[in-house]
Length: 266
Image 1 (cartoon, one colour):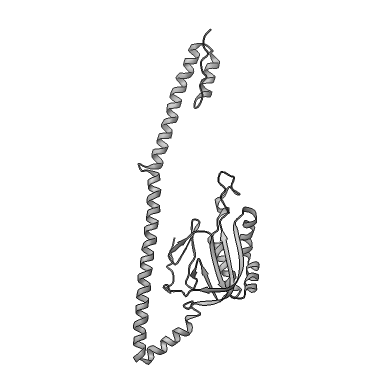
Image 2: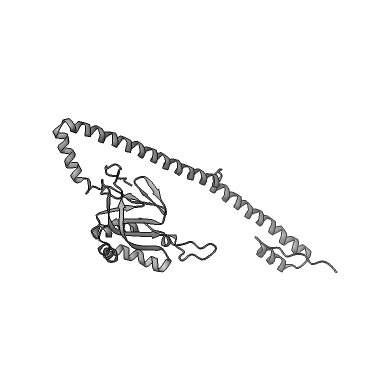
Protein backbone atom coordinates (compact mmCIF):
# COMPACT_ATOMS: atom_id res chain seq x y z
CA UNK A 1 0.00 0.00 0.00
CA UNK A 2 1.44 3.40 -0.93
CA UNK A 3 1.41 6.31 1.50
CA UNK A 4 -0.90 9.14 0.34
CA UNK A 5 0.83 12.43 -0.47
CA UNK A 6 -0.01 15.56 1.53
CA UNK A 7 -2.19 18.13 -0.23
CA UNK A 8 -0.57 21.50 -0.95
CA UNK A 9 -1.82 24.39 1.21
CA UNK A 10 -1.29 28.14 1.38
CA UNK A 11 -0.61 30.45 -1.53
CA UNK A 12 -1.22 28.65 -4.82
CA UNK A 13 -3.19 25.75 -3.29
CA UNK A 14 -6.15 26.48 -5.55
CA UNK A 15 -3.88 26.47 -8.62
CA UNK A 16 -2.36 23.15 -7.58
CA UNK A 17 -5.78 21.69 -6.97
CA UNK A 18 -6.90 22.56 -10.47
CA UNK A 19 -3.83 20.91 -12.03
CA UNK A 20 -4.22 17.82 -9.86
CA UNK A 21 -7.84 17.56 -10.84
CA UNK A 22 -6.86 17.37 -14.48
CA UNK A 23 -4.54 14.42 -13.84
CA UNK A 24 -4.61 12.43 -10.59
CA UNK A 25 -1.33 10.65 -11.51
CA UNK A 26 2.03 11.35 -9.80
CA UNK A 27 2.98 13.44 -12.82
CA UNK A 28 -0.14 15.54 -12.22
CA UNK A 29 0.88 16.13 -8.63
CA UNK A 30 4.40 17.08 -9.74
CA UNK A 31 2.86 19.59 -12.11
CA UNK A 32 0.85 21.03 -9.22
CA UNK A 33 3.97 21.53 -7.13
CA UNK A 34 5.79 23.06 -10.10
CA UNK A 35 3.04 25.71 -10.12
CA UNK A 36 2.94 26.06 -6.33
CA UNK A 37 6.66 26.74 -5.82
CA UNK A 38 6.98 29.82 -8.07
CA UNK A 39 3.68 31.25 -6.77
CA UNK A 40 4.88 30.89 -3.17
CA UNK A 41 8.23 32.45 -4.07
CA UNK A 42 6.43 35.35 -5.74
CA UNK A 43 4.29 35.91 -2.62
CA UNK A 44 7.37 35.93 -0.38
CA UNK A 45 9.11 38.38 -2.70
CA UNK A 46 6.13 40.73 -2.57
CA UNK A 47 6.15 40.65 1.24
CA UNK A 48 9.88 41.45 1.36
CA UNK A 49 9.40 44.30 -1.12
CA UNK A 50 6.49 45.74 0.87
CA UNK A 51 8.45 45.63 4.12
CA UNK A 52 11.47 47.28 2.54
CA UNK A 53 9.31 50.00 0.94
CA UNK A 54 7.59 50.78 4.25
CA UNK A 55 10.77 50.89 6.31
CA UNK A 56 12.83 52.62 3.57
CA UNK A 57 15.97 51.12 5.01
CA UNK A 58 15.17 52.11 8.62
CA UNK A 59 14.08 50.33 11.77
CA UNK A 60 10.45 51.41 12.20
CA UNK A 61 10.41 50.70 15.94
CA UNK A 62 13.60 52.71 16.42
CA UNK A 63 12.06 55.55 14.42
CA UNK A 64 9.01 55.67 16.70
CA UNK A 65 11.28 55.74 19.75
CA UNK A 66 13.28 58.56 18.16
CA UNK A 67 10.10 60.62 17.58
CA UNK A 68 9.02 60.09 21.21
CA UNK A 69 12.46 61.21 22.36
CA UNK A 70 12.28 64.36 20.23
CA UNK A 71 8.88 65.24 21.68
CA UNK A 72 10.22 64.86 25.21
CA UNK A 73 13.25 66.97 24.35
CA UNK A 74 11.07 69.74 22.91
CA UNK A 75 8.85 69.72 25.99
CA UNK A 76 11.91 70.16 28.22
CA UNK A 77 13.10 73.02 26.02
CA UNK A 78 9.72 74.73 26.35
CA UNK A 79 9.82 74.39 30.15
CA UNK A 80 13.30 75.92 30.29
CA UNK A 81 12.31 78.81 28.04
CA UNK A 82 9.19 79.47 30.11
CA UNK A 83 11.28 79.56 33.29
CA UNK A 84 13.64 82.07 31.66
CA UNK A 85 10.67 84.18 30.49
CA UNK A 86 9.19 84.22 34.01
CA UNK A 87 12.51 85.34 35.45
CA UNK A 88 12.79 88.14 32.90
CA UNK A 89 9.21 89.30 33.57
CA UNK A 90 9.96 89.42 37.29
CA UNK A 91 13.09 91.47 36.58
CA UNK A 92 11.11 93.90 34.42
CA UNK A 93 8.48 94.25 37.17
CA UNK A 94 11.18 94.95 39.75
CA UNK A 95 12.85 97.56 37.55
CA UNK A 96 9.50 99.18 36.78
CA UNK A 97 8.69 99.34 40.48
CA UNK A 98 11.99 101.06 41.18
CA UNK A 99 11.34 103.56 38.40
CA UNK A 100 7.83 104.28 39.71
CA UNK A 101 9.22 105.32 43.08
CA UNK A 102 10.78 108.42 41.52
CA UNK A 103 8.53 109.04 38.55
CA UNK A 104 4.86 109.89 38.93
CA UNK A 105 4.09 109.05 35.31
CA UNK A 106 5.40 105.50 35.69
CA UNK A 107 3.42 105.13 38.93
CA UNK A 108 0.24 106.28 37.20
CA UNK A 109 0.67 103.73 34.43
CA UNK A 110 1.32 101.01 37.00
CA UNK A 111 -1.89 101.94 38.80
CA UNK A 112 -3.81 101.69 35.53
CA UNK A 113 -2.28 98.27 34.82
CA UNK A 114 -3.12 97.06 38.32
CA UNK A 115 -6.76 98.05 37.84
CA UNK A 116 -6.94 95.91 34.69
CA UNK A 117 -4.94 92.97 36.04
CA UNK A 118 -7.97 91.12 37.39
CA UNK A 119 -9.91 91.28 34.13
CA UNK A 120 -6.79 90.19 32.23
CA UNK A 121 -6.39 87.10 34.39
CA UNK A 122 -3.17 88.29 36.02
CA UNK A 123 -4.35 87.86 39.60
CA UNK A 124 -5.25 84.77 41.63
CA UNK A 125 -8.99 84.24 42.10
CA UNK A 126 -10.86 82.27 44.77
CA UNK A 127 -14.54 81.40 44.89
CA UNK A 128 -17.23 78.77 44.25
CA UNK A 129 -17.61 77.21 40.83
CA UNK A 130 -17.66 74.06 38.71
CA UNK A 131 -15.19 71.35 37.75
CA UNK A 132 -15.81 69.70 34.35
CA UNK A 133 -13.92 66.58 33.23
CA UNK A 134 -13.87 65.16 29.69
CA UNK A 135 -12.23 61.84 28.88
CA UNK A 136 -11.68 59.46 25.98
CA UNK A 137 -13.75 56.28 25.81
CA UNK A 138 -12.08 53.32 27.54
CA UNK A 139 -10.24 50.85 25.30
CA UNK A 140 -11.10 47.30 26.47
CA UNK A 141 -8.13 44.94 26.23
CA UNK A 142 -8.97 42.22 23.76
CA UNK A 143 -12.53 43.48 23.49
CA UNK A 144 -14.49 45.14 20.73
CA UNK A 145 -14.28 48.95 20.60
CA UNK A 146 -17.56 50.86 20.81
CA UNK A 147 -16.94 52.27 17.32
CA UNK A 148 -14.82 51.36 14.30
CA UNK A 149 -14.04 55.07 13.85
CA UNK A 150 -11.31 56.18 16.30
CA UNK A 151 -12.54 59.79 16.06
CA UNK A 152 -15.74 58.74 17.83
CA UNK A 153 -13.78 57.62 20.90
CA UNK A 154 -11.65 60.66 21.75
CA UNK A 155 -12.19 64.19 23.04
CA UNK A 156 -11.63 66.79 20.32
CA UNK A 157 -10.62 70.43 20.39
CA UNK A 158 -14.15 71.56 19.58
CA UNK A 159 -15.49 69.60 22.56
CA UNK A 160 -13.19 71.43 24.98
CA UNK A 161 -13.89 74.74 23.27
CA UNK A 162 -17.64 74.17 23.60
CA UNK A 163 -17.28 73.65 27.37
CA UNK A 164 -15.03 76.70 27.77
CA UNK A 165 -17.34 78.93 25.71
CA UNK A 166 -20.41 77.75 27.62
CA UNK A 167 -18.79 78.53 30.97
CA UNK A 168 -17.81 82.03 29.81
CA UNK A 169 -21.37 82.52 28.56
CA UNK A 170 -22.61 81.41 31.98
CA UNK A 171 -20.75 84.26 33.65
CA UNK A 172 -17.51 82.59 34.76
CA UNK A 173 -15.16 85.05 36.47
CA UNK A 174 -12.04 82.96 35.88
CA UNK A 175 -11.16 79.61 34.32
CA UNK A 176 -8.35 77.08 34.04
CA UNK A 177 -7.69 74.11 31.78
CA UNK A 178 -5.40 71.46 33.28
CA UNK A 179 -4.51 73.98 36.00
CA UNK A 180 -3.41 76.69 33.55
CA UNK A 181 -5.26 79.98 33.61
CA UNK A 182 -7.18 80.73 30.42
CA UNK A 183 -6.99 84.35 29.25
CA UNK A 184 -8.10 86.22 26.15
CA UNK A 185 -4.96 85.25 24.22
CA UNK A 186 -5.09 81.54 25.14
CA UNK A 187 -5.34 79.12 22.23
CA UNK A 188 -6.36 75.51 22.83
CA UNK A 189 -5.04 73.26 20.06
CA UNK A 190 -5.69 69.56 19.54
CA UNK A 191 -2.79 67.33 18.44
CA UNK A 192 -3.99 63.74 18.05
CA UNK A 193 -5.70 62.88 21.32
CA UNK A 194 -3.64 65.44 23.26
CA UNK A 195 -4.13 69.16 23.83
CA UNK A 196 -1.50 71.90 23.61
CA UNK A 197 -2.04 74.97 25.80
CA UNK A 198 0.60 77.68 26.32
CA UNK A 199 3.25 75.35 24.90
CA UNK A 200 2.45 72.45 27.24
CA UNK A 201 1.06 69.10 26.07
CA UNK A 202 -1.69 67.39 28.07
CA UNK A 203 -3.44 64.07 27.72
CA UNK A 204 -6.93 63.04 28.84
CA UNK A 205 -8.81 63.34 31.07
CA UNK A 206 -9.09 67.08 30.45
CA UNK A 207 -10.21 69.11 33.47
CA UNK A 208 -11.75 72.58 33.24
CA UNK A 209 -12.39 74.60 36.40
CA UNK A 210 -14.42 77.81 36.44
CA UNK A 211 -15.30 80.24 39.22
CA UNK A 212 -18.85 81.57 39.19
CA UNK A 213 -22.36 80.73 40.38
CA UNK A 214 -22.43 76.89 40.11
CA UNK A 215 -26.12 76.61 39.19
CA UNK A 216 -25.84 79.26 36.48
CA UNK A 217 -22.70 77.69 35.03
CA UNK A 218 -24.37 74.27 34.99
CA UNK A 219 -27.42 75.70 33.19
CA UNK A 220 -25.10 77.27 30.59
CA UNK A 221 -23.46 73.88 29.94
CA UNK A 222 -26.83 72.20 29.54
CA UNK A 223 -27.97 74.86 27.07
CA UNK A 224 -24.84 74.81 24.87
CA UNK A 225 -25.39 72.95 21.54
CA UNK A 226 -21.72 71.92 21.33
CA UNK A 227 -21.78 70.39 24.79
CA UNK A 228 -25.07 68.64 24.03
CA UNK A 229 -23.55 67.17 20.87
CA UNK A 230 -20.56 65.85 22.84
CA UNK A 231 -22.90 64.27 25.37
CA UNK A 232 -24.53 62.21 22.60
CA UNK A 233 -21.11 60.59 22.08
CA UNK A 234 -20.88 60.07 25.83
CA UNK A 235 -24.12 58.09 25.69
CA UNK A 236 -23.29 56.16 22.51
CA UNK A 237 -19.60 55.41 22.87
CA UNK A 238 -18.82 55.77 26.58
CA UNK A 239 -16.72 58.94 26.56
CA UNK A 240 -16.25 60.52 29.97
CA UNK A 241 -18.16 63.64 31.03
CA UNK A 242 -18.52 64.70 34.66
CA UNK A 243 -19.63 67.99 36.20
CA UNK A 244 -19.28 68.72 39.94
CA UNK A 245 -20.00 71.81 41.99
CA UNK A 246 -17.10 73.16 44.05
CA UNK A 247 -17.61 75.16 47.22
CA UNK A 248 -14.25 76.88 46.83
CA UNK A 249 -11.74 76.94 43.99
CA UNK A 250 -8.46 78.85 43.86
CA UNK A 251 -7.28 79.53 40.31
CA UNK A 252 -3.72 80.81 39.79
CA UNK A 253 -2.81 84.01 38.01
CA UNK A 254 -1.68 83.76 34.41
CA UNK A 255 2.07 84.35 34.24
CA UNK A 256 2.79 83.82 30.55
CA UNK A 257 3.21 86.16 27.63
CA UNK A 258 0.24 88.29 26.59
CA UNK A 259 1.27 88.38 22.93
CA UNK A 260 -1.30 87.11 20.46
CA UNK A 261 -0.56 83.56 19.24
CA UNK A 262 1.02 83.29 15.81
CA UNK A 263 -1.37 82.65 12.93
CA UNK A 264 -0.25 80.00 10.45
CA UNK A 265 -1.45 80.00 6.87
CA UNK A 266 -1.91 76.79 4.89
